[in-house]
Length: 284
Length: 102
Image 1: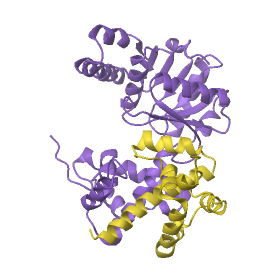
Image 2 (image 1 turned 90 degrees about the horizontal axis):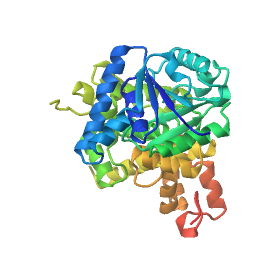
Image 3 (image 1 turned 120 degrees about the vertical axis):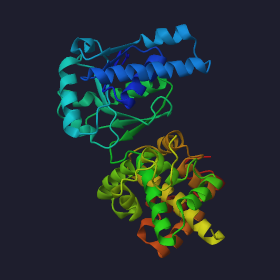
């Protein structure tokens, strides 16, 4: 299906980065949020991203201005009437996402695709509150969405092949790499990363090496670009722990990261964002 | 870190990565190619986990897994997609067939 215009629902960092990525390739975007101050912050964030690109010499200032005008920042439902694809990027709460999908289902043309950027919740469960479950799929961007190349296109139980094809093509159009994945807890990347992270965390608990010693070995042997502890600290230990618990409940103890991760989370040491995690981070 | 521990760490990390990729493949969640592309583009791995197993040799992977299974438990049990390929003489790059064809 030809994608004429895309709506991004939720103007947090993820939503803003996705809207920027679309506008950068000249696709008309409506960035929607019920909160005017969130829209204002998103506008500043996106202007900042365009300015960085201009400063690097990768875009001329007039080009940046022109592409920026591709984005309509709006809370007005009327702005959604000719949208072909909506990508929701609201907080990870099933009830909230279902409410957003019900509203989009009411406002968007009958063949429009409803996509969710969830990294953990069931696409099928979201789809089934709409009148068009076959037009619903996941479009899982990685953080930060304007830099990370991968998009996992998630097929729910009811998703039509045409929808997966359209979302894959849209991903390529915005210079991303799409892979089609059937719905399961963790999808592909988070499931594999968390499995190896949990294994290394158990190794640490068994032998008592430092995070640094372990990360050094993994980076030196070039088996991953970052050590698992560096990655966990960057991601946020609260998020890493959440994902590990979800996957442990779904698949069993191979996702049990051992005692240190939950202990750090309980102490409020969440990694880079709090200055302390497996490492001490200097915040400047 | 002693050389032996270092090798154990590398084996546990790379094989946990491979095993989860193999499970995703066996469950039909994604194709072998999609899984490897996802891990390269989404996690920055230098090689996809299934192509990695093919390049090491599936017979070598099998030996490493049975050793770790004995030492650490059944989470390292060789997966069906591995034993089937070995049974067919498909050992990866060196026999021109494994998870991928060469």
